[in-house]
Length: 219
Image 1: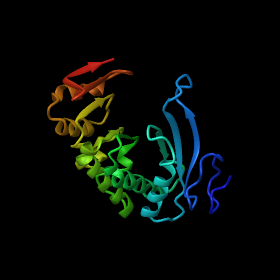
Image 2: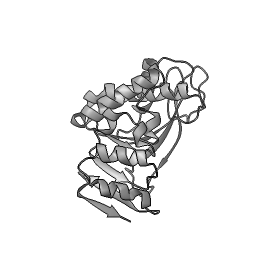
Image 3: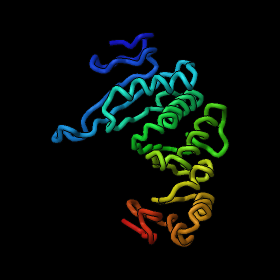
């Protein structure tokens, strides 16, 4: 069935958002053996030059139809346009931050986080996404919202986001500049341990922060 406005095809049992700019394009149980298993949702955002607030409302309309304990995967990589990805990121983060007073526990995992909240935003939409990330990193905990950021370039993440991270899981890091930046940001971790990341092999890493009150190396 096509969503109104010519959006992507959706499953009949999942009503599309009113304007068709947000659609659920796939889903599946993580564990079929448990009747209440968490459900995985993959959401595709079709921006079509729609303003961020409108897209945020469409996203909320789509996701709120599902069980609150679902895992939603927001696909931002289907467009070759950096501007489109910035709009999608801003819309997603705007909805997550605006809905904070619902106090629904959420873990927001962001891969290649330096593309979402860079130190120097490329345009107004990326600046808006970064602004929301800073707010979530600084105040999200009291609303039950937590961030999990993954990146290979920590120097490119906005300093007001990275500095709010309480935990560090560090794998191999080749850039001397990134290693120095992490040492300065996570000052409670011995710099010598962070510097060892340049020699880590596959599967080796460093854990520090609240998850490891005493920094430890792992394999």
